[in-house]
Structure formats: C-alpha cells, structure tokens
Length: 184
Image 1 (cartoon, one colour):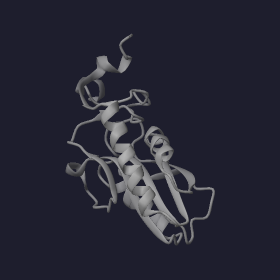
Image 2 (cartoon, helix red, strand yellow):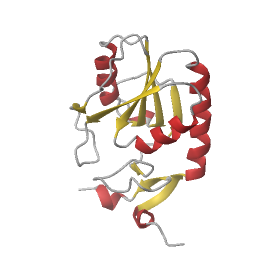
Image 3 (tube, helix red, strand yellow):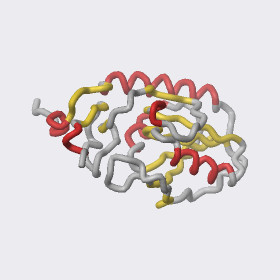
C-alpha cells in the first residue's frame, strides 16, 4: 500500500483511525441514550468537523435532525485570531429543541463561547457541546463540554478533518504536524 502524503509532514501519530472509531461509537451510544424521546438537533460546525460528525451521526440510533454552521476564527494561520465570523448559519429554527453542537476541536474556547451565546439567544430547550478533541491547556474562555472524545496536549494537530492551510483533512488519524510546516 502506498504511503499517505500526510505521513511525511507528521512528527507523531497522536490517535489512530481505530482509536477514533472506537471512541466515536461510545459517544454515539451515550448521545442516543441521553437524547431518547427528545426533539434532537445536532449541529455540525464546518469544515473540520465533517468527518467526526458523519461518523458520529451514523452511530446515533434515535430520530434526529442535522444542521450545519460555518464559523471562522483562524484564517490560514495556526493561531486563533480571536475574532469570530459566522460564514454559514442554520437553516432551521432551534427554538424549543434539544441542541447538540458538534465540534472537531476546542482550543481557546473563544469561538465556542461566542457560538453558544448566539445559539442560546435562539431559545433552544437545551444546548450542549460534543467535541472530538479537547485542548484544555490552551483554554482562554471556559466552556461546558458534555461529551469529549479525547483530551490532547498543546500540539498542532491535523487529520480526520482538521487541517493546516486547507491541507491534511483526509488523513484518517490525528497527527502532530511538524513545526517547520506551520511556523513562520
């Protein structure tokens, strides 16, 4: 089998595709229990979350609606700019519904804090967060996370939907990107 192009740019593999798959199934099972009988809406935060969201939703066993939002705080760099921009908003009203925001990674918490404030103003019955990766050491704003896939160290990671400058999303694991790739 040919070597994946991403491997040459990765210092180390943090999570394998198999580890991710196992944890995604566990999260989906818990979500299915917790939202049973509710008017459940899961929101995918584009674009980095697409792989995680698709895999997670495939394993949820209860009726649900799905929505998409696109929010930006990075641009083409490796550090959050601190300013949050909504690029694509929900199409459906979430008033009175049980809403789960699904994120790929929570880093500083700034983007998620702004997003939860925005969505709370739309009066959902409940608003919770699920993330694949939690980088607690970088937190500037505390945000409540109900479901966490993995707590990870303060490393710049790519793969499984996460990118650097729109590359590396298609790698099935999560790898630590070599510093020379993203440092100025």
